[in-house]
Image (tube, rainbow over all chains, first blue to last red; front, side, top):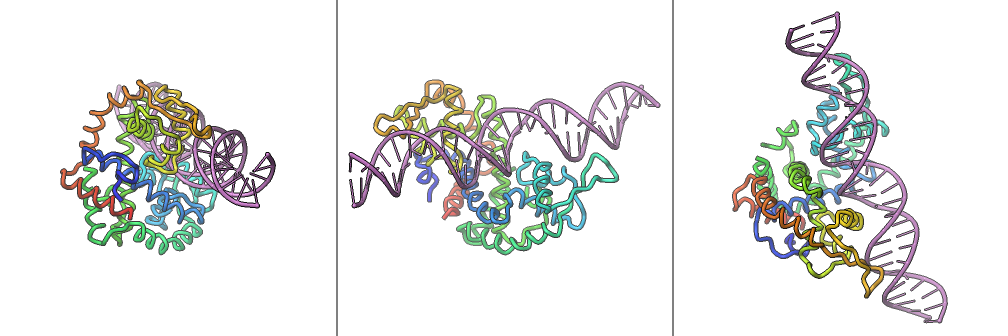
Length: 149
Length: 149
DNA sequence: CCTATTTAAATGTATATACAATTAATGTAT
DNA sequence: ATACATTAATTGTATATACATTTAAATAGG
């Protein structure tokens, strides 16, 4: 459905302004749906993302600031997200011997297990939630990659 | 830049999963930049959006639940956002005579003035922030409208 | 008319985002 | 070696998001 109808607004004069609103609105749609998959596993979307970052390095650890760098939301707070995951025993924290300011984070067996359980479900979800053909999705990816400059 | 490089991740196997991550990441990029315009006016992006909804009705009032309906983030809390705007004297609240459960919200002169001041700036921002040609932006809008099904 | 249900808004609580400030460790320059 | 700047992580605070609960008013049915 056209964004103007969904938010009951008069047509945009300007395609750029429409695109900004469209991106914000589509994001909300996505995250709302996404949360439904993660909630039964007691994970937020960004917590899931941190686990995936950690799995990408496993069995090597990664520092808090490296996690921050790779997070989807750069302004999010890796330190506190890691703390939440630690409480749930999905990650381990260890002081880095080389540089005692740094903290090495590793995903635990439990963390890997939960990612494993979610793998197929998330993949199906991502396909279902985007009502586009394969070539349209590829087009969208190209546009988004270009958009950010 | 390709999303894989920006978040230092190995290439996605699946275009749909890449698109979901790409949308989340692009949203973060947008909102981070957007906040910089609104901050000097003591507004958050969603508060700005509520003001625009109110201007769309002005001089007619609109109820809190109608605002909620039209908000970009459906799960946000219109009641509390309106309260914040009221403290800043950008909106007025009046009990609805027809139905005392409802509350009529109207944008004030001050609210309109601030929107007026932001108008050109936001329009320029929206164009600058999206590094795409006009036809690419239109393509993006079509894909996003279709994506939500 | 009275009770039950529905609806509108507000409130409570947990998590996340945004950004400033702090603390502790490391690096650098004189 | 000491002082100063930089870096990594944590902590503080305000706002926003997500969702459940509460309160009060309106509506529907007997």
